[in-house]
Length: 346
Image 1: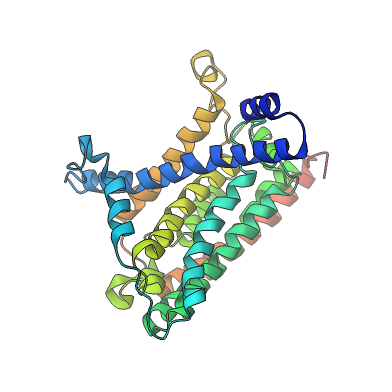
Image 2: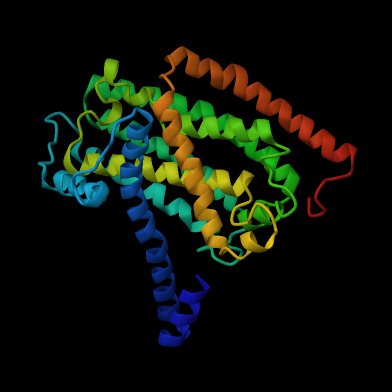
């Protein structure tokens, strides 16, 4: 980001138009690699699950099947976009756009390095929580606008599931904020210089990761798109690029939630140990390595864990995660006050 700032200001000057061009270049510098990452995450998922199940996965299109994402994109773009007769056409087409756009705009506050962030706002964590909460609207609108009972039931399932786990996610985030005393994501990362929060807040780290599985509708919590009873859930009526936007939005949300997990619990761009070979690795690369590790766990869980029943999903969220995360907030705040460890800026 600093390189883009310096290059842009050198070429375009310091006028308002120049500043707007620099911001646009920053957005492209974040969005383009993210879209490529989303495409190759689908390839990585099929390869990882294939290896776990002792089969090859994609290996035909290009060397090692590396061109498979481009073949999939070409297939989806060449298919016909089907609009159901009774559907609300405007909302039907708007829903996948909402899902996809929300998965991208959240990256505005994710710090890749100490000074490499598009918008270093003081309420970054609230911005992330608000954007991730809005994602349910795309799913609800898709289910309702499709004029299909299967799609509508899938949308209702998803709304209940996402709202249920957002409550526990919010309480888990409060536990982290109590230890930092700031809503700024860069401050949260810098507070983990001595020890990553995944160690003292290990139960919260595990609960947060499980909640992100439910928040992104991933296995074993992929109930909104339960093929056996709902065909394909809320996007059953979608085809071509409208389906592709839902598909890309899901995988972009996986990357986003992995980045949030790394930022809150795994020290963001900070290396695990401050020793010579490790601290010479660029900070941005550490961030990418950690995000890839969390994404691998996403794929590992999908390949090895059977799907929950819906009543089990709700019981886990409301009867286990909610009371335990609330208790942990009380214990964390009590511990910090008792030992006078509250951050000075609180």
